[in-house]
Length: 89
Image 1 (cartoon, rainbow, N blue to C red):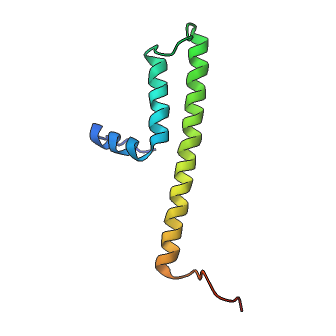
Image 2 (cartoon, rainbow, N blue to C red; image 1 turned 180 degrees about the horizontal axis):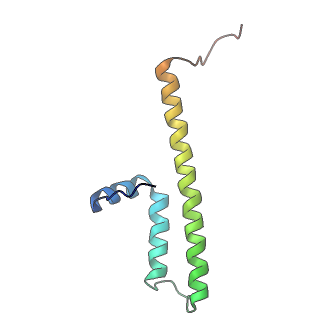
Image 3 (tube, rainbow, N blue to C red; image 1 turned 90 degrees about the vertical axis):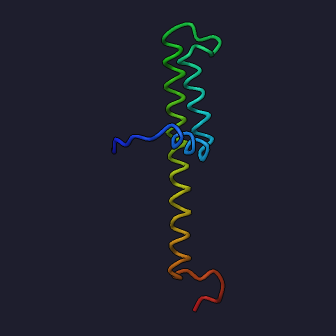
């Protein structure tokens, strides 16, 4: 894992590119700042945070996979290795 420093603007740009991650971050911050109603015990807050991080991980993996699919499709189109139409010989 690389330890790269991103500017606030770069983080904001990346979060706007991935709104599902931005929503998860906002939800985590609401727990941290005690904005969530009904979270009076540490166990409840921990359970909510663990669930939010788990969901964020799933959504991040899905976004990564979609990016990989798009990148592979572009590579295949660029190299001309795929034929979309025509009769199989």
